[in-house]
Length: 540
Image (tube, rainbow, N blue to C red; front, side, top):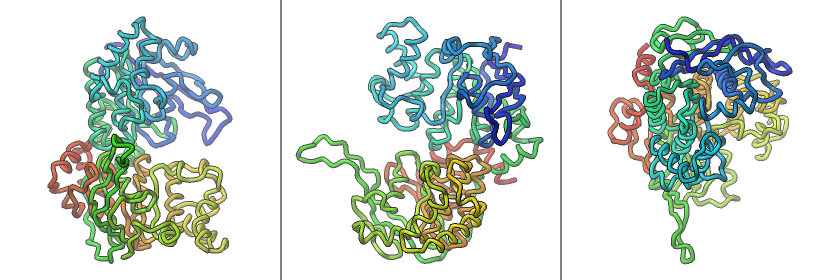
């Protein structure tokens, strides 16, 4: 047997000052062989990312420390190395791709310089040699027009392109081990498929060992050789992909797999309610050419979008990043002003209303964002966040607090938790609070802008059930923005597919999934990871 690229043995990482448990991970043993992809799955708090941080010697100082165990990279013990010795290892022998490239990349440094920095630290190449090598690795990760992109800044690239830059940085020195920490979670299906294909391609071409951290079993079914399942800091089960996905032994693993949304839509009754929302030839254009700025870049983000949502119905808008989904949602919520077209809410056109006239209608359209931690004020208790809106619209404090307590119970949280702050809740709990805050305004239209994309599959399933339950209870019209076809299949009555600002296909969810008409819609379904796995779950 070849020496494993990575061999973690009985690793325990202690939490300084205690917490809900003494150790972040305990007794963890994982190995990764050359040319092998090992996927580590589990919910938030299971210890997946802590394991990868320990391998990279990137544990936060004063908060986590290795208490015992061994980490060997190609037989070389890492736990006894100093930080300066680890700096020589990182990048050259082991590299990492993070979940969110926009936070991992320096926003004021050109992409080519960030890739080249690795070469500057670890090689003797001169400036010309470094640039040539950077261009070579950018081509290898299929970045378009590398000669221009090498001098671009991160904000000038799409999410998928930024992730490719991160992968180029990781692979520029041909490391023996690549650690990928949720690298596709925030990406749309087509970009996700490209990144997964790229990682497999790199792994085969370079015989690199890959430790791939994810909570997406669709991704696992697509790329894994072996699977490690973690819960509360411990490994509960591991085996080959076939063993884990087709014959899981542990109840926890079975629960995770059962939580994966199916690509097969359930039977949903046709909704016959009155039309709550109707947009007519809605347009949004960014950038305007003028006499003084003839070269201004004009982007038509939304083009002639006409949709409607009935009371008690959920309309899903799906498409890639940049397709205009979120811009449509923000226009409807009047967070941005549409360029032209109508937005009728219960028959009243709010598209051109000025703020003073619009204010009474703002209560009627509420939005739940993707990241509840950023949308909740960290300095205010969740109770203060929930009661603020109703009180601003005239409800007295006692009634607003009573409503908040009722809503906390409705979303599955203790009413007594109103006095706690957002950081004292998990991600899924914060999203429940964001839903409660939206419902406190008694809206007629609820917009979900990727509200479950950052959540674990088990928590995602709970939040989706909650959204469906509140839709039924309050007879709400729901506009659901998502790039996840599995989620759309389970929660949406009808689907509108967007590409480059245009709705290219619309219809009942079951019909669109069973018989997509437009070539773009077909390409989205083709790109969805783990399709056979999803259908098996749906059938089972």
